[in-house]
Image (cartoon, protein in one colour):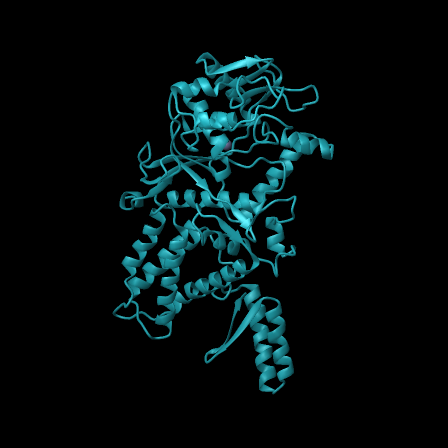
Length: 494
Ligand SMILES: [Zn+2]
């Protein structure tokens, strides 16, 4: 029996605005599409939060025993500066400024993105398609939408006819907007475009003579609209109707709304059963933005090279911090919050590492089966990682009090605790025990620290307290904390 047959997962569906029981279209299998990065700059921490939110979803679905096909694209063309249909292509602009080939920009920032995701120990998606690798599929969809009468061609460009689509379908059902309001709130900009209505969006844009990234099509040499690539790639790899579509909250409108319209116009089918949106990461209460300097990049975090930070933080601690908030809540990043998360993570890991040292009793004071189910309940409730983490701390408390001899655990409970904590900490949350050195025999760092502890003991025996304090203080500065106890000195990494 698979775990998913025992656990009832509920997902908050952005389109119904309620938590719904998750039932995949094909039993035992899940198709999930997540909008990937536009690779024209280094991935920032806010983007990382979105991708880590879906890494958690991917990991938990796999943990439950589902066969998951997770498609996350790379946008390497067609994403214009203003997210709509005007301005320069973001990648082409960066290439022009740096006087390099656009594909050099794509390569550089794709590598940066993959490196960062690896540092965060995020799993690779099952398929990572690129927009430029699917121009033919995009042209086919445009032809289909034209033949269904929901698009029109003007001067070599093709636009989606939102008003005509809305007459037969519901444009705005995901974002909760309605077309009449959109019309009332739109200022008509003079001579701005060939569109019939400002709400229409481009499926194909004729390239200006200076535009480098261009492909032949029946309408013009040009490039596809940004919204179209996700429809083309999700349909190609997951079919016209699939289980989960995710992305950042800011993509709900217009990007995802346009995806729904394109799919319904071309296939007649509602493409997605569960829409999931991850919330923003702010910095000191304000939106992260490169222009204001209120911004932090992952590598600055890992090295501590940013004035906002008092020290460096590991990727695992950063991830632990992010998962202490639900993916749908806004999360504010600050040095203080990270320091607190680091302390919490270290406490949790210290307790986890103590488990093998606990002596089993004939009785348990801690209901391990109930606790284990509470961990699942947390994740079954729309991937509620903060509640899961609170449950992990409950286990840590039980371990500590048993270690202190105040409570007891049976051997089989110790084993369930060990396995469940391992599953949730490492497989589901995808955290890493960066300080897992004390229990790791033959580890060179542990050996080296133990040599220093030996020298310090010698110095103390010789009443050379200046040297023993120096060793303790300098280790402390290097992030290694010595603890003197009745069984000798142990250490932990800060
Ligand atoms: Zn997308």
